[in-house]
Every structure is written in C-alpha cells, then in structure tokens.
Length: 154
Ligand code: CMP
Image 1 (tube, rainbow, N blue to C red):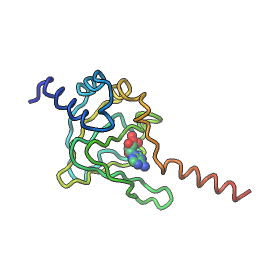
Image 2 (tube, rainbow, N blue to C red):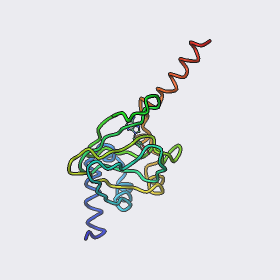
Image 3 (cartoon, rainbow, N blue to C red):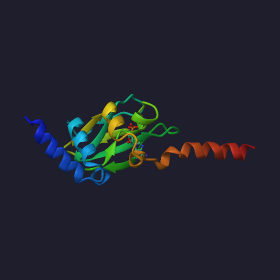
Image 4 (cartoon, helix red, strand yellow):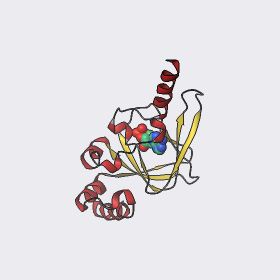
C-alpha cells in the first residue's frame, strides 16, 4: 500500500515531467498530487462514453487511448486521435455542460493507467487555467456547415 507521502512524491515528480503541468506553481502540483487517484482500465474499455454525464478529469500516466466521436450524419463512430502518457482528457463535461463530447477508448493492449481528478478538485485547481481550455477543430465544423447552408439557401 502506498503512504500519503509516497503518493505525493511519485505524483508530483510525474506531473513535473509532463509539459502541460510542469510549470504550475509548486503548491498547485502538491495539491493535485494529493487529490489524484490512480486507476487502471483494460484494453478496449470505454473510459468515457459520448453523451454520458461526467464528473471526472483524467491524465494518462501509462499506455494509450483513442478519442472517437459519433458522426451525426452517418451515425458511425469515427477516429479522432490517439493520446498517450502526459495527455489529459475529460475537461469538457466539467466546463460547459456535464455531458461527454466524445468517447475515450483504451487502445493499448496492456491497458492504460490514469490519474483521475474529481469535478470539485478540477474546479479548484485547474478549471480556471487557460491552458486547459482546449478548443477542438471539429467543434466548430457543424456550426460552419449550418452557416453555409443558411447562406446558400438565401
Ligand atoms: P469530455 O467531453 O468531458 O469527454 C470526452 C473528452 O474527449 C473531452 O472531454 C475531451 O477531453 C476529449 N475530446 C473531445 N473532442 C476531442 C477532439 N476533437 N480532439 C481531442 N480530444 C477531444
């Protein structure tokens, strides 16, 4: 079993090795290390399902996942990108609405180790940071298509 101190040291040094986190104030890193919980997910598991409600934010410590999304016209699940160690996901449902905007599927045959943060800790520690306010290219696509249709019908 890990003691609180071991967890602190291990998670803080992991966060220091990840570009997205390494420049955060020492105090924030230490609070994050306290609040994070480790979890393992086997290959093929959906860590997050599009459309479901969500209350957690994830950082990949080891392994890889795929981001996929249901295409609204074809209804098929399409591949968006891979994510590996140091990548993070799950911030969208904690920001705007509480609904997940994509699927996160474990693609690594050995599964994936994640560090998981609750909605409350996310809000307190990183929710206000601009660097975690990621905009995805496909988010604006349906809107653009709608605008285009509107213009051509005029
Ligand atoms: P959330 O909507 O909470 O759950 C699914 C997550 O997938 C989402 O947060 C983002 O972290 C991530 N995600 C959604 N869309 C994309 C995208 N187009 N590219 C990369 N990651 C995405």
